Picture (cartoon, helix red, strand yellow):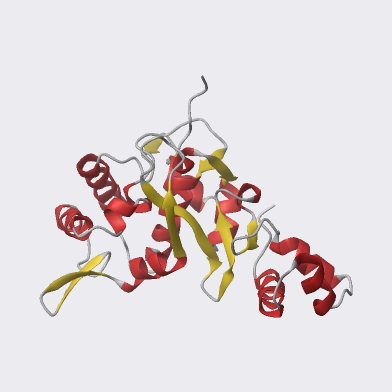
Amino acid sequence: MSQVISLLHRPIYTYPQVDRLLGLTENTARRWINGYKRGSRSYDPIIRPEARNTTWVMWGEYVEARLLAGWRDFDRLPIPKLRQLAEYLRRESGEEFPLATHATLMRPEGPTMVWKAQQVAELPEDLAMEVTTGQIVWTPVVQQLLDAATFAPDTTPDQRQMVTDLSAADDYPLIRLDVRRRGGEPVISGRNVRAATIADLVAAGEQPDDIAEWYQLTIEEIDQAVGYFRSHLRIA
């Protein structure tokens, strides 16, 4: 009987695709996910426990890279301390991708664990968690990820809740990256229709009303597919 692979462990993108999806400079995703070498010195990954010889990025790695991308504007954010944060969360949660699971992101004990990890790693107090009116709450960067995410049961027997899809971009919520559909390509929300297909039809001169009828879509969904591909590079 074949082993069921968790959706979080499903290989889905290449490193250059992750760079393009997240608007990162070339090779940033590879450095975050798989570490890198500079001269004779090797630097450990942030997201993976250790470097692996693979060209593919797993879904759970992409979700956590998206969160890191939201932090990249922090001034002089120390990479070793981010590794310490990730190692603490993996150890305490028992999850390889703690920042892609419902248990960490949505249950009451999750924020407390992340707050402690932030303190242990001596990271800025407003990185992931902050204290507001005496309560520990997610910072806007993490809340933005939560607002973009859909949680659903994994394919493994325990069916734990995890991030299964995300909006492709904050300004196009109807265009989704879904690990279960079309190999993670941008699709119309809840559908197997690639956003690229719709954008290409419009570019070829087809009328939005006709496309809406052919694919049973709304005009808003068509507009968002076109808008997304006008402002974002394809991942292929």
